[in-house]
Image (tube, rainbow, N blue to C red; front, side):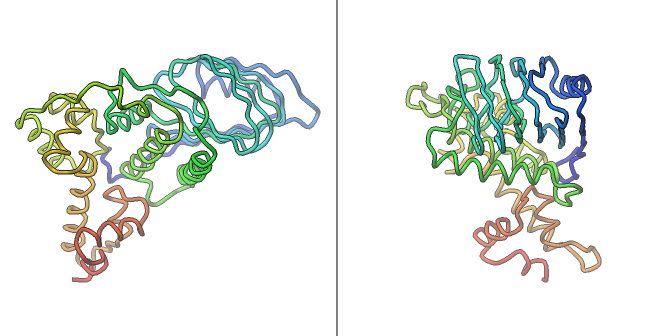
Length: 325
């Protein structure tokens, strides 16, 4: 699937008052997790909805039950959770966190966590670990050195910022039949969330001054990276993938782009996509039915207003002006 195509969204849902049925559903969606109910009532209920968009999953859990869940160590995805109602306690990996309404947290890779929840309503985003590694690489931290060091944000201001961004992303990923949920839009939403996570939750990118130098990149390797970007602007590329193609480390590639182009590889790619978007607008015929919104989504810009701002900054006029020419 190219970045221009709409993402195939799969919806899984359960509404039940039966403990065995709920346990079976949770076990299917979250493999290797062990669930045990310890409090119920005649009117108890559990409703779980999971929306899978490409490699990203947005989950809603609404429960009036009390339960414990042994969460198996995460390998491929990191979970970000927001509590909407009720109480919870999470223990494991040296962490012990109590959750209340509006609290947010991250489930890190590799830690086995025991969750005790009472009438707990939560929203969860499942983000591929490689997206977070790519965001860390942009900060100059290699994959082997990256990890979250705490489950909760560093301060209340960052927590409020994260809550707003989390709510927006979760809403967009769970919107039914979205006309702009293309591969590039999903990628950019998750990249924004990953970059924000590194600024909100304590992690090793915050200790960048302890990392070794980036090393050097041969001109031929840098050119391979640039050529690859120009040949694949519609693909949802990552810095790690680009560095592997160029035959160098992520941090060294970041350093080379900064020195030679005064930008990052992904910013270079974003400007390249703006160029391609302008080509589409200038080549459009009235009978094509092309709009600015369609063009923005095609090239990975999920917010039309933001696309127009970036476009005007680069070209000196609005995208609508190019479409009318």
